[in-house]
Image 1: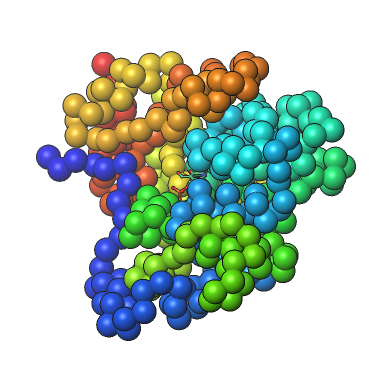
Image 2: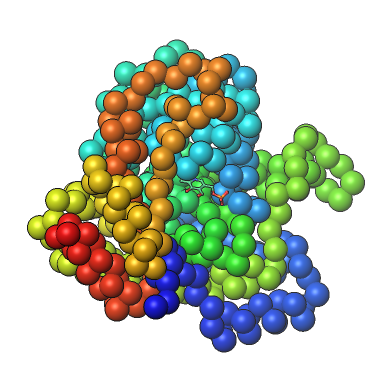
Length: 360
Ligand SMILES: Cc1ncc(COP(=O)(O)O)c(C=O)c1O
């Protein structure tokens, strides 16, 4: 029996041809493929600019620097996220203030408001698993408290809130092209999207050693540039993004029908949201036993994420407060296989195995 992987990046001749053409061009860093991809990414999200970077972690750090954060500034961020969201705040020398999750596993705006202080400068919500955060509540909070809004869209490229793509609601947004993401690259990659000319210009400069021309460096940046080979592959895949997200949504419906009636909490789509199911995450108190059972049947699962940010040793010095909803959910969540390239039959195999587990 072949193993059902958690995720499967697409590979085909059209993608290979695009990469081969980029190899032949002999331009490998921030060349014409990158420039065209930047225009196409910005157009797809309905913003003015995109700045490609070596990863979404780099994009977060660049955006935070471009937004002007400094030591002592506080940034509201969900504890329940991939650690890089929080790590980038620390790398930019600001202080993350960790917020509890709401019923949809994303940042709880009420808890964020309760944790704001006079030192709070911004809010960094994460559209987790492909589901938009409550953007009405988050935008309202940001405007009432005078905070900038930076959207972490690493898991939600193509998701929408009230029919508008995520990434167009804040001062800036970051995206990831890690191979399991909704827009899957052939390695690490990311981008900052923004309609703010100053944020764009500062991100471009910081991405390339703070350089303002070949020999003059206006500030200390770093090398966070992007590859032409990767950009060539991503341009092919960006044209397929909507179709790939539709496919993920179909597979999510298939799971929902197949798993209905079991003692298992299924993902729910928030009203006004178009969820793009980067991950298909279910909940059960019997998480470990279910994961073992599926592994024995050659089905890969994951836990995103078992250790919430406020319990990470790296942040112990901040003495973060307990977050009851986050702590409860991280013990029960389990990620089932999901990607645009999964076959119906693979999803049916996962459904049958989960049903067997609960009827045993
Ligand atoms: C929500 C979120 N933010 C940021 C990142 C960092 O992305 P990258 O691996 O491209 O640096 C990830 C990666 O998993 C993520 O899931």
